[in-house]
Length: 85
Image 1 (tube, rainbow, N blue to C red):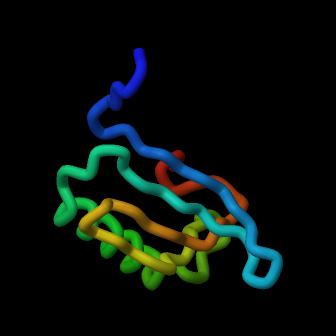
Image 2 (cartoon, rainbow, N blue to C red; image 1 turned 180 degrees about the vertical axis):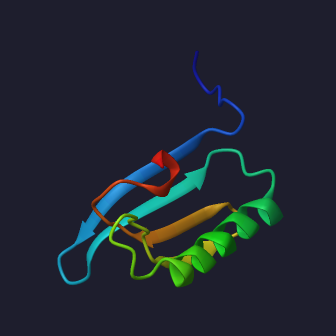
């Protein structure tokens, strides 16, 4: 099918800038809940503060949020994500 988008589909890119290092860019194909997206981004930023010195968790640092378009940019971190704990 051409032109069909599944609701809540998310695209993620891992990119690396030669001067700044690796980043993860994520966005929703059909943004529909900007407030909830911004809330999750904020919770992630708070988790960074709470677990900043953990040797068991890897949390990427938030860099940029576009709540309206449900897009975010974070520093990419190699390791086991919190969602797998």
